[in-house]
Image 1 (cartoon, rainbow, N blue to C red):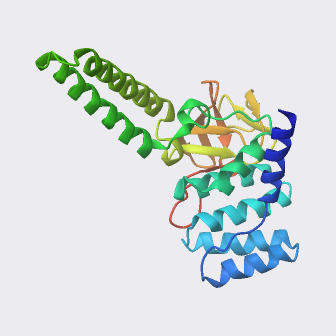
Image 2 (cartoon, helix red, strand yellow):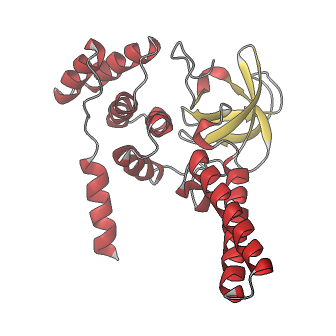
Length: 252
């Protein structure tokens, strides 16, 4: 077991390098800067392209790697999630997200991992539909055909179970990575307050990389729901939404 974990760790660390993203000058410049160990300049180059609305999975993956090298766990987790938003099968982004999350105590929202995290929203939707049709066909065959009734009834029950599990996963995901209200905390010691004022009492102190759900926005403050279900006000500059806006501002 220990050897298996060490192999996973090696794979995750080995993946922390840039991938080719696109033909845009900003991406090429960012890759060159990253290769030279200039991670801050590389991050700025990738960010400039994102702000222009040039979104690709590899670009967000490379940006996340640069932030990880800079010790910025919050923005690394944010951009690994954005890479997976665009390409759910991006193996390197998934491995690195798991690796970085393992190095921070920050809680995630329901649906960010575990059983519901096996598939994205589209995957669970298709599986729910397939399970539903299997249940209908199986039970229909069991009613109208005496032969192999046990087999068709079992197929119907199995289909219903798959459909129910898929629907439950969709409830847990609440939109998953595509949920426009999902946001990532960018900095340690971020306070969620009882009211939108700096002198307000803190509900909870959040760590970089933690996830919240944005309920409403009021000027420089955002009202959020935390992973434990409690709610509070957070300064808008302390978090970004996973789904980026067209101008590259994740909180817009």
